[in-house]
Length: 244
Image (cartoon, rainbow, N blue to C red; front, side, top):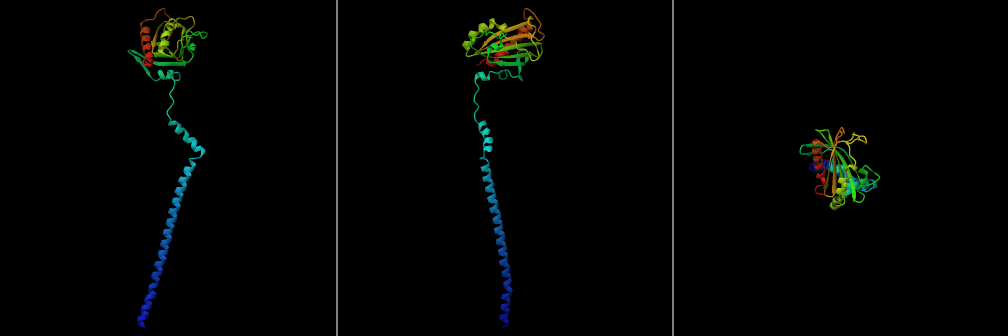
């Protein structure tokens, strides 16, 4: 009996450990399911967030923001020759203009499509029947000498049309406006500044280059400084159009 009671006592003594293990296992299962629930909730949140972002990108506002990027990736339409015939393209202000000992900067620029606009007499067009399609005018001012050169570039449809107009431009060179540097005014109408001029055919363009002193000094014939300055300025003017 003592032995049986001892055995029974041991059985009773062993029950609590089994109960503790069961409780521990239940607690671990609860904790495990809690982690799973958290992870599941996190996974749902991530998926939901991703879905919401995808949905948000489909709203009209997002489409508008995406459209410029798509448009920016498209190849730009090439400009026509008339659209690109601009002084800033062919004679940028930041560039230094050099030829032999000639050093100058661009001190004024303008352009237009009506060739009458660059002529002194706006009531008649000396090139009306010669097919002039546009013009640009720039002023090149020397940095080492008080000399400014006005360059007028006339554009024609082709080299043949420009060649037909060449003689007329040479004969009427004085009928075209002088492009003055910014801040420099034209002299009085009766004044005749000393000047050197040169007209050249360059591809389907004609360049008219006239050089004067900044102080508008008068004289019947140009001196050597004006002549050499004009020759160099004319060479600079023709360079952008030489291979066109």
